[in-house]
Image (tube, rainbow, N blue to C red; front, top):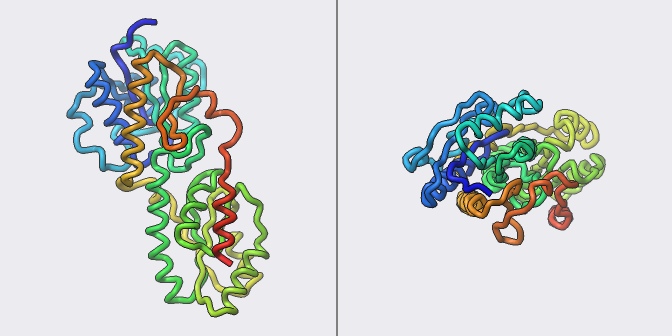
Amino acid sequence: MATIDKIAVLTSGGDAPGMNAAIRAVVRKGIYHNLKVFGVYHGYEGLIKGDIRPMDLGSVGDIIHRGGTILRTARSLEMFSEEGQHKAASQLKDRGIGALVVIGGDGSYRGAQKLARLGINVVGIPGTIDNDIVGTDMTIGFDTAVNTVINAISKIRDTATSHERTFLVEVMGRNCGDIALRAGLAIGAESILIPEIEYDLKEVGEKLIRGFKRGKNHSIIIVAEGAGNIMDISTRLKEYTGFDNKVTILGHVQRGGAPTAFDSVLAATMGGKAIDVIREGKSEVMISLCDNKIVDKPLHIAFEGKKPFQRHLYDLANELSI
């Protein structure tokens, strides 16, 4: 296998707090080991167009605490085509870049897999607030997003208490309920509605009524965005209980902000591990957190099945919110 002396790094898909810390780790550890490091701007779209720039130590100075991604990100329809994939691979090969670190979610991983089949050594780092990638216990940005939700709900609860109302709060996560589940358990939500578990709004309503009868004057219900239309849920709950309720959709505020210490450390260790596996000559692998250890796994694992749902946390949340 030819020795790799040039590598590139890109971020793709939705941004996540901690991506910059991962970029910094890839660049600085790469330079430490005498690799020439390039940044690909605007994700796969930028790769196809050749927006590839050399990076040095100063390129990643003072970014570890910043949210978002300094490399920017963009969706690329062209990357879905074979022609686009060949263009992307050629941009790297023409510059003598033998390895690419892709920081992103499962869609980003699929793009990386296509490039691996075209002769590029690829390493995936899981960067998404959704925590929905199979093969890793946690993804970069998830912990920060959960804490953002918790901070927002602590403020919403003040209003809920003052007005003696029920608040429904929608959180992100696509078809994964991890943000809703972790945040709901942390703040003591009365109900948590997630796509992994079928729910009965009549039971949710009866829980609200029981709380009201024992003197509870406010409630918080967390709804994962993949669990259904929150406005419909709000209307049906009001019809059943007769209680007024308000809806808050937190939206993209969950993606922003400085990463938590956990996400910063996770990003740094995963970025460092990516350089290790490149130097070992590995390709088509992903970096994962498993049983509190940073390991590498075959990339195809990310596309096999669905990430195991932590039912014990859901059951505990229900037991504590009686």
